[in-house]
Image (cartoon, rainbow, N blue to C red; front, side):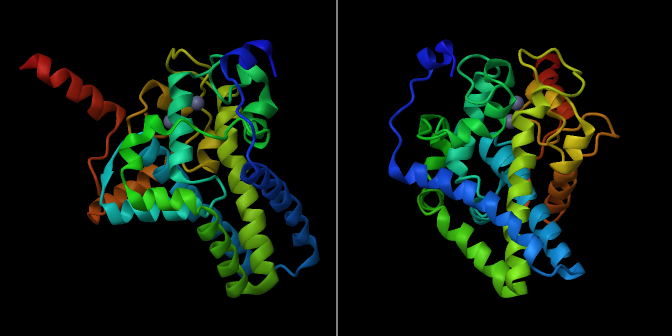
Length: 285
Ligand SMILES: [Zn+2]
Ligand SMILES: [Zn+2]
């Protein structure tokens, strides 16, 4: 820990429950070794991939583009559903996630950023900040628009119930292979793919916009995370639902949200272009 970071971000004492959280995250990593001891089949691989994709959509479209940035609108029921599936991803509840993410945008790559490669290195930005307790006790005053919903506060408080319930479901669907491939392995790959946006997407890739941070656009990360790899575009215009700017910048979460908007499940989706048009419109009247 650097002297600067210690001075600017005093670490609160760790509560027992937070230490349990770190131990369980490490335990789930170790549990992945189990895939070498259970039979693998096409069905189980499909379960693992499906489990990854559905939960990545909940993280990307839900935790990030909806809860953190409110970049589109939806019903209270679908809002809960996004939060529920996100909670099954072992990335804490939607309030925790959105609070730290808003904090990241506010202090990107400064000493106050909780996860910055520039400030404290790759490992710390990737997962160290979370494992060493730096992500505990978020200041929820920056997510008051979310804490007003009691069902979201419930999800936050009982975040382990959906997560464990999902593990049990994978076991019931396909036995031990379902548990090890569909839950443990899929959850860990999902965790690291998400974490790469905090680490690698601030190091490797191109920069279209001169933002005040190190954010990059990276096609490989965009593919892995259903569109989050267009991170420089995102830091430039964080309230855009779509993170790809050019037609060829594949953003699968955006395409999924477009499809949901045709069904009336979500609405008021935004793009970089639509936000720019809205800004120009009042002045030209
Ligand atoms: Zn970032
Ligand atoms: Zn963001």
